[in-house]
Every structure is written in structure tokens, then in C-alpha cells.
Image (cartoon, rainbow, N blue to C red; front, side):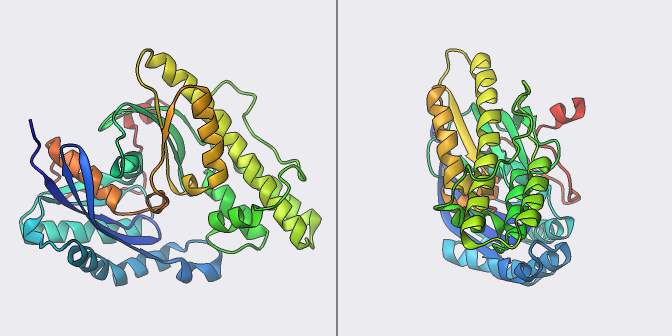
Amino acid sequence: MAQVPVTILGIESSCDETAAAVVRLENGAASILSDIIWSQNAKHAPYGGIVPEIAARAHVEAADHAIKAAMDQAGVAFADLDAVAATAGPGLIGGVLVGLTAGKAIALAANKPFIAINHLEGHALSARLSRGCPYPFLLLLVSGGHCQLLAVEGLGHYKRYGATLDDAAGEAFDKAARVLGLGFPGGPALEKAAMGGDPKRYALPRPLLDRPTCDFSFAGLKSAVIRLAETEAPMDETAIRDAAASAQAAIADILADRTARAMDQFALAHEGEALRFVVAGGVAANQTIRTRLQNAAETRGFAMSAPPLRHCTDNAAMIALAGAERFLAGQRDDFSFAARPRWPLDEATAADS
């Protein structure tokens, strides 16, 4: 039976992008009617990282303008919406509160349902924005603040295979870029510097590769890059390129090894089914890492999907899509729904760990 199309305004403000988007979902196919992302990179660059107080203030200044731009670009009025969805966590609580409050206010004023979205679920569903990506699939969610492997069995049904025990991969990228003097944001800066570098020049650790689990650890690698920068100083341009390439290769090795182990577990649990693998989150934009993951997927018979580069990093289209899927599933949230600095995507697994 044909599905009635639903049109959702999504709002995202969990870190340092103020984003708003309108997505229409019909018969499982998403159409992005608008997609506004306002970056705060210039505000945080002088500090070499994200400053929560600056981020929250910037969200306050930008939220109304981003939402208006999204509605204008989509050519819809608030009355045309079926619901409003906003990130309710996890993230920097000051920023989350800005977008969450704006979403509630619009829903209340327009007499529309409100849906609170887990930011991680937005990333989990982001590959479904532009191409067919049916459930179930194995997900590697890898970003500045998160690094985990999950079986996505369906909307709201997640099983964790592994997660970082300390830092996320994006943190390792940012720290390496900072100590090598490459600028902010660190991920793209380090990837650019690594081009043409020798990834074997510096021997950097690959924590946990000898353990039969799917967990990650990047703290030791991060510390090793800091020591490298200190002992090799001053580094010439070639040394910096080689160090960047070596750090990137180490991160890629860790991600590929842990993901391969999770693929083996997922394949056993879904024997006889089509095997799908999705990589999402800001680090998924790194081409070296994508290539390594693609090789692992092909070796094990997985079809790999990844969002377009624009939707790897934080965006509101993924929040709107998650809102649309949850709206069709019957979810409606009360205006008392509180912002959450921490919100495990797999709450049952997290409670047992």
C-alpha cells in the first residue's frame, strides 16, 4: 500500500554546526527539500578546538536564521509540516538546548507533533538519505566524539559489537593535526597533509589489534603522536607530511581491523541474508579510511554504503529523516523531553556493560 508522504523539519545543534533541513519521506524514499548547514569553524579556529561556550552562543545567534533559510529553500510553511524533529542529545548541552528549544517552540506554535532525536541515530540512518539502504546492516559510526560498531536491525533496534574504550578516532585526528601545526578542523587538515607522505616512516601503535574483540582505543596512538612531534621538533615539511600519513595509516588500520571482526560476527548472525555495511560520521569523509573499509567489506561479501560527504558530518537532513521514520512509527514526544549530554544509541547494551 502506498505511503502518504510526510514532511519533517529537522534541527541539529549538538556540536559546532547550526543546521536545519526539510525532508519528505514517501514509500521509503527520502527527498531533501532543503539542507542548511552553518559552520562555526572560523569562531573556534583560534583555539585549535571547539569551545563549548562559544558554540552555544553561536547557535543562539544562528538558529532562527538557519531555520528560516531551510523553510524558504524548501518552499514550505510551518503549516505544511507533519512534525518537527530536533536533536535532543548526545552532545554539548548548551548547543543541544538551543536547537531542542527552537524545535519545541515551532512545534507548539504551529500545533505540530514534536519528535526528539538521538543524534547518533541520525548518523545511523544518514546513508538512507540518498540511496537504498534497507535494514538490517552493520554500522561503523566514527566521528569526533563517537566510535562504535552496531548492528542496526531496524529503527530503534541496535546491538553494540564494540566501542572506543577512551578517545574517538576524530579526537586522534584533531590532536595529531594540532601538534603537527596543521590547523582546525583537524580531520580534513591532516588528510590533506598526508597526501604524498610516507605512512611507514614513523612506527605508531595500533592498540588492541591483538585482542579478539571489536573495541577501539586511540589514546595510546594520540600520545605517541604527541611524543613524536616533541622529539622530532623542529619538523620540516616532509617530516610533517610523513607524520600525518603515519598517523592516518594507524587510525585506518585500527578501524579496518575492528570492523572486519564485527563483520565476521554480523555475518554469522545473519547467515543467508544480504550483508550490508554502512560507515557514517565525520571521519567517514576520509578517503583513505573509506578505501580500507571498502576492501574489508568486499573481502567479506558486504555491500558498503556511505552518505555523501556533506552528510557524513553533522547535518539536519539526517535528523529530519530520523524524525520522519519515527513519525511513521507513531512516535510523538512531550514538550518536557529534556536535553541529554549522554544518550547511548543502544541503551540496553550500554546498561549491561
